[in-house]
Length: 161
Image (cartoon, rainbow, N blue to C red; front, side, top):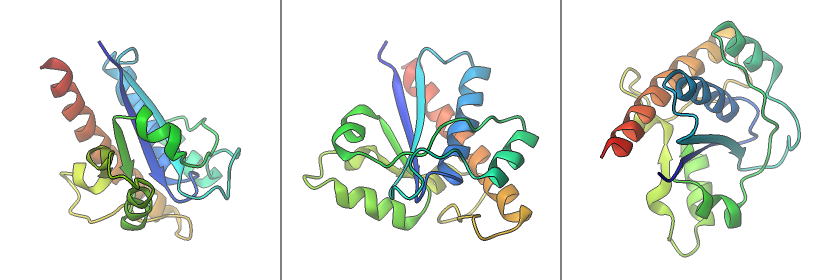
């Protein structure tokens, strides 16, 4: 069976996308799907390349049992478009930025908004908690748990077919 590969994308790859990566990795492990589903994250900008997740997001995620261990990297169209099955963006600007890099429109069917997978949160995008307090980070984690759970169910259904 071919692995399903998911890439979560936000602006700097230090808050939302590494949190989504950590959440999804835990969900994948809990479902014994490590050998079938691969998860990564990236940013549309390279401001924080090589850095770990924002310490505040790491702390809030850790309190929920998620480890955010990846280092920030910038989205690479030449490698990431062909390599990933799902490119899941956090907000409208990330979605537009990633779509704009798909010059020949060959990969548009791989690009999604995280909000489209949410069932418990009626939102258009995942807000950036960077300038928010604790409530902002907790709210983002709530949204990401919702979206990641539903995305995982979608992939599980695809695998079963």
